[in-house]
Image 1: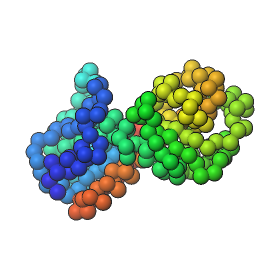
Image 2: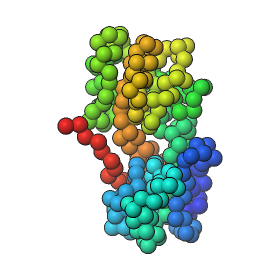
Image 3: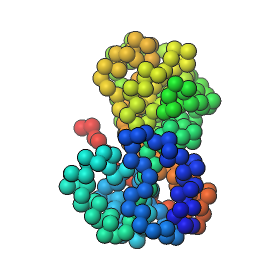
Image 4: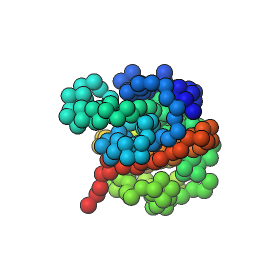
Length: 257
């Protein structure tokens, strides 16, 4: 498949004109419209990802996070080094970031589907927040195990104070923002009756806000966004069966010791 046709497919599913003004989604180092036979799909762009593309003679990488967000990032030596290697090896990168996050079948929808939730909807107040319902109610201790299992997470972070005081109630309705979505908590109105909010990064003071809203809050970490790799692989397998997908999950893993 020609690169431009593959781009048209992803632009239809996750329109680039919906990305945030500060974002840097789209092509990087698109030097020609070549025929795509192999694609490397990754969450981030780092030296491990680039080397895997080179070693497998892959000329197209589809990533969630762009190689850089701000042009000010270009001053960093590791970014300069990556760009030089990418250009020297004629590698093209297509990044689908905030446009993927808020798409109807993008990041946050996919996280809830992975959790087997039903009645998934997009919040009117925010394009990033999706919410849905568990088939059966779970207590907080059970939901912790459930989330770690279905999202393949080694750990999650929660507020123990809230856990003891309000999380004895059963959880049914869950909202999610996979990335840095803690500020989106303000968009959740009482009328939605959200029991649990999952997001990839939580500012400290928002735990107190969630507690006063009688809502549970869990930090699932940015690594939960690795579902991007699975979603993109499924899209390519469905619509571009002649393209071979190579997955690369080498990214920034934070460890708790």
